[in-house]
Length: 284
Length: 68
Image (cartoon, rainbow over all chains, first blue to last red; front, side, top):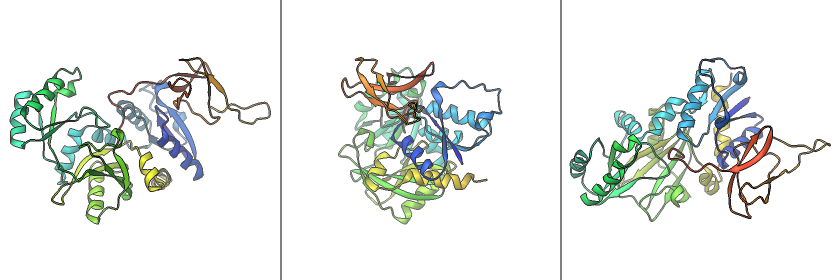
């Protein structure tokens, strides 16, 4: 099969996927998104006719969204599809979808101004965590332990130009056991997961969180599958938080997965699994 | 973009660092968009194709919408 790989920066993950595809006997057509000229009225494109599917790998969320929808518009299956990338890329949308399906998520409130933020935080109880609805690698996520902290955070947010900073997504702070879980969902299975340990309350590996292989309970695996399927499945990263009273909550979902640390600490060939399983799905 | 010599064997091209003008070795299977750190000056460089030629430019800075 010829597999398309839409990308903007060629990272370790993209190289692992290309190597895996070649190793499994497929060929790869790299689609370097930043250099493309896309005519939206051209809905048929000879260039993509031979592709079995495209792996969407742009590191930029908006490039991933736009290239996915354009490719889909030309009849090429994209993993993950535009809709899944959109729903996972906005925390407000993700939490709303998960909560509507009865999936346990941290108590979360959305408000549109500082007065209502103060009011909602009092009801939620401090500490609270304020997150940008669009954001990644833990950036601009802040914890307020009291009202003064929250006012500082709101001042900062309201001085930002991007309109999404005026939408305040405030979440209860979850006391975690120095770690959270990143599980990988691949077409109905959870083949591998890691704990991300950190002495900081933010556990993102992009911020120095240490990855260690995790063995999930049946209940956690079920929760990962249910969460991924709530947004339409495919190939996803699902973050779980374990509370002190033994409950598992779903933090966020990621539609363009980063997995180099997982491969490094588990030895699991996740790139090979993604390629092999996706080929099975789109085999004609 | 693979570069080959006259016998059809891949060769490792050397490109010029746009920051310090030093020489940078590029693997023969490198693709457009691939990042390289120039060991001599520490610059983060991105491989691009301009007018059919492989060149290095300073890598794009991390943007607000990058990452998972």
